[in-house]
Image (tube, rainbow over the protein chains, first blue to last red):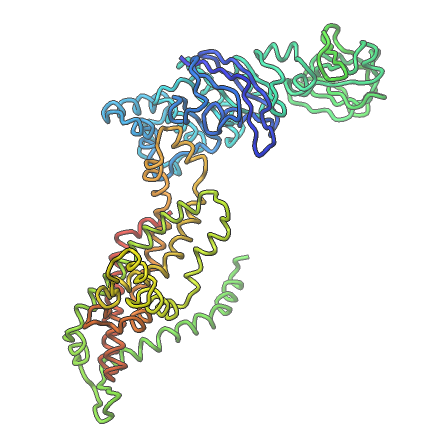
Length: 333
Length: 290
């Protein structure tokens, strides 16, 4: 079991509130991703759950039990750090066995658990190596191995993939997701990469300046963002925002249209503009169009098209796919 | 950049310093070897000529010889134990965020800037003197008989004085090593359920292994040659109780006026230093491999 509840959690560093007031319910077995720009407090929030930082006020509960004043060792959580934080003087075997050793678990049982973890993570051949003799992905797996042997209530991941190259990151993303499906243990995962968040999470917490902007499933966030921040943060390429007269026509302070919901035409449409840069990805083409009186807009079109820079085009939003926002940036529905 | 020409240029540029270093090393060594096989008394110019191994025999059969060897090793081991042990504790303390950290650190380092003879004078007269020393005053305050440190525990006193001088060095090296330990590693150990003592034993101490090795190796080089402190405080006595090898060499060569035997003693010291070095490299040298 591993449900995590935050009740009005506040964290203040030297008079500066990093997390003003956060309340969250993370259910047992969920994969929850904290996502937000750097400095939004997502790592601090994770460290508060881990017990590595003291909460200034509010309560943290695990399975309904208040653990706010308990040290990290007594919360029964495991954490995977950004730098992996492997112990360099120990072999892979000793690294994975370390939490068991600290829990004074019988050596034969520990041995068995290490072997099991190593098998799951494809580390059996590397058990007697030191971390420095491993590749980035292998180190990452050792860190995960060290976390799973204890059978924690929940796993905490602090940007675990940011030190890996792009190809490996995609692999590890899938491996961690598969691991979650196998273990069915609660996982809380911090990242600044919205693609990681969208692909891995059951539910996503979007954080901005220490506030929870929205908490929901990836598709909820995509389909009905609560405000302009979430709308701009979730989705790639970013949502287009239009203000002024273009928005006024829809009785809103600002409107947003995702690049995949903009139609492009040579003959007619709502906004006229000139093609700037065309990014050909093969499967898709991203056209950056300078719209008269509005600014640069991104359009996602099919992979094979012949729009060329400088061409006059017309853009129009797909009906029903327009997001409207008020002056404060809140979504109008 | 590494062309043949730049290599040759580098060689020429380095040549003067290599040459000077070589002379600096070779000439004294050659002179010592030369004198070790000569009859050479400052007190009697008529005694001269080749001596064979007589000087060596004279030096190693000196009743002070074996005590001197043992005292030399005791000083090395004693000072190393105190400085590394206390150094780790002090480094752990100084690594904590405390008020006035900068000043505390400077105060901590200051003994290292006191010259050995000055330190020895201060310890002898201000601290350890049984009549007006600070330690004696403390003893009397508690109603105890003052201890005559230098008279009754001469070797221990010297070990304490030398350890006081080297403690800052050890602390400083160990502190910098401690600061290079990643915070995440300590936190990971904390998450893994290691308490303060186990974190120290399994994470911090292994991380310090290389720094401890450096401290041991560098200090040993200097500790084999402790001289000024002995000369000023005990003069090697009482008896041979605080005579170490360098002091015995001084006694023989300068006080006894027997330059030949003193030079022979110098070579014995070189051999001893090499034995200690081999032993040390065997014991802790592997910590230096990355």
